[in-house]
Image 1 (tube, rainbow, N blue to C red):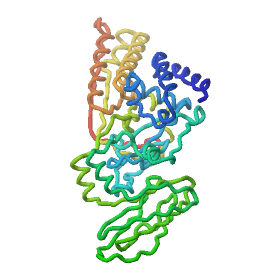
Image 2 (image 1 turned 135 degrees about the vertical axis):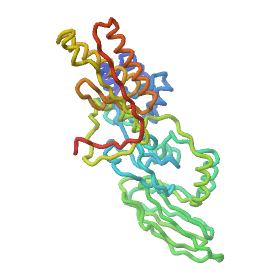
Image 3 (image 1 turned 120 degrees about the vertical axis):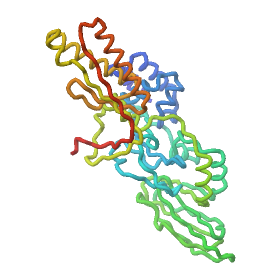
Image 4 (image 1 turned 90 degrees about the vertical axis):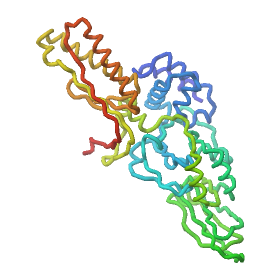
Length: 409
């Protein structure tokens, strides 16, 4: 690690209004003690728990650190069944579609920012080139290709272990041979999370084994070809040719989907807390520092539950006549400071200001309610002597939302 560059950038975090100097120091000290895997795809909420930091402050620090090039921020779309990372992109714009397909689970995954989009941070290669070989072994492959935030049930893990047939890496430009004995009237899948594609190997119900021709499978960045093959029970031989620029992990498994879907429903996986796409959109540091990134003009993303807060300052016009222009202007600005502080304190973001009113968003209704209470208390304390007759009206709404890029319209 370039320790000098690292320390310089950590020190510069305290220049952001979102990062306290003490928190930035603790943040930098914790990072210095992490190994390469610890600096790869960091979950800010888990990091905060492990290092006794406030989770909201930790998220702000990672966002600020990304802004100055200390970390790379990534939006990961996660399959809710297997935890596979179906897409990893630095920009939300590349998630601009309604569904992704998981080739392993053979299901369509809706892009919902509340649940299936995780935000992670990896140390920038300009600061530290990690010595991680994602294709070294099966453990490295799993850590790189699946989210650590989803934990399948023991029942599911046992079932998947029983379905496993083969796994191997295939280097660029090379062939890999796979051989196995196929049972009658079954479905096998040859799949790769790296290209998010699969070949269905449909075995007929013949009781007597018949000789199968060798099957040649072409792997490209667009996926596998062919995508379905009809075969007989008995010996199956597959030659997989990788034309991708990097290695791919290829697995073969018995795809007993009715049984696996039943287990997933009856014994669902558990999720560790993580920074969701919705939480990032409702983070004031992200909205201010990244200006919502370079968004596609047709961007539309679904949010299952969003809490919106609206304010209206009562008496703001009359107060100019009551206390004079200078005093009235200062009161209005103090009022904005109270609102901004309350929104940030409760993990929200100001989406829009309209005259002396604001519109703010929160990931959870409770956060919006607590922010509203703080605002009312703050305004009451500001006008406690009764001379400055200002009042604050607040409205809250919770429900599904559609995130769009209004600037492109």
